[in-house]
Image 1 (cartoon, rainbow, N blue to C red):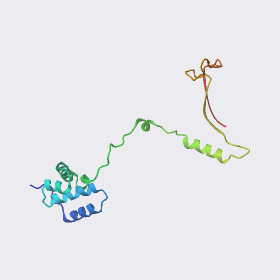
Image 2: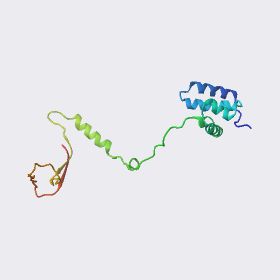
Image 3: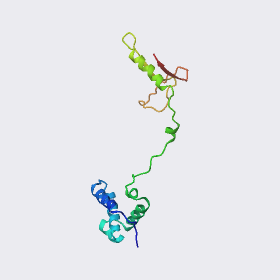
Length: 158
């Protein structure tokens, strides 16, 4: 029973060389198993010699028949990376380059007489947090409210 198609002599030499030179020893074992099968060794003998399961040898034979060399190469471990919704829906600012150019021009023109200040977003809460807190025995905290329950957002470029 012929398990493998005939492999040309120069390809067998390349396979031997690849098995010796590769750093991926699992790939080398797969190549050696194919070479042993091609020489006429039975699958159980190949699996005992290389200390692998017979089912693995059969799987390698099948992948070599269908894909050739690519079928023997080690596949990357784990699941392939999936696209996530945030990266798909994230739209970059179309005016980003122009804004950065203006900021860089402002920074280049900065001096002691004309400084550049940037104030990031600041939240001011006029509504204090009321909740449990540590107190000394018999004492209470007084919470002072301004009468305005609101939040103010500041963001400016000077």
